[in-house]
Image 1 (cartoon, rainbow, N blue to C red):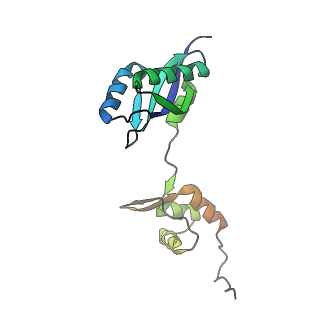
Image 2: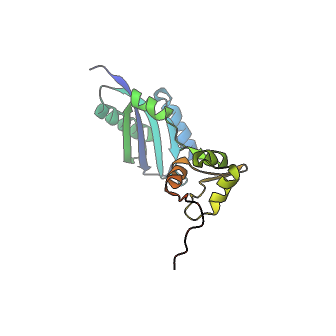
Image 3: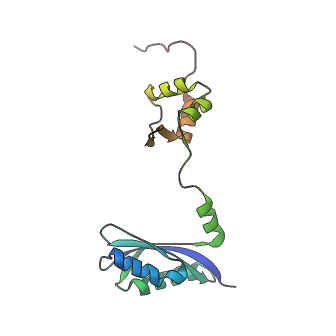
Length: 163
C-alpha cells in the first residue's frame, strides 16, 4: 500500500506547564507537518493538529504520537488522538460549524406570518430562546423554530382556560 497523507489531532497533558513562547517554538519545529497548536490557559493541556504520511490510520496515529512526544520534550500523557484521511478532512473543513440561525424575518417566513407577529412569538411560553444576541436582534436555531412551528396551536380563537 502506498503512503498517504493523514491528518491527526493530538490532545495531551504536559508534565510541565507550557507557555505561549514554548507553543510557538513547538509550532515552528512542526512547520513541515503544517502544524497548529492550542494551549489551555494554565498551560497544562494542549492540542496539536498536524499532517503525517503513513500507509494506514494506525501507522498515522503512532507516527503523530511519536512526533508530538519528541517535539514537546517534557513528557506528555496523550488524552485524545484522532486521525482522518484527506477526504474526511476535506469534508470536515467544508462543513459549517455554526448551525443555521434565523432572525424574525426568517421566522415569519417559516411560520407564514408577518414579521410583527413573528416578534410576538418571543412572548409565548415554549418559544425557542435566542442563542445569539446581535445589534440587529436575537437569533434562534432554525431547527428549534421549525419544530416549534410544527407543534404550535393555530386554531382560531382563544384557547379554553383549564380549571
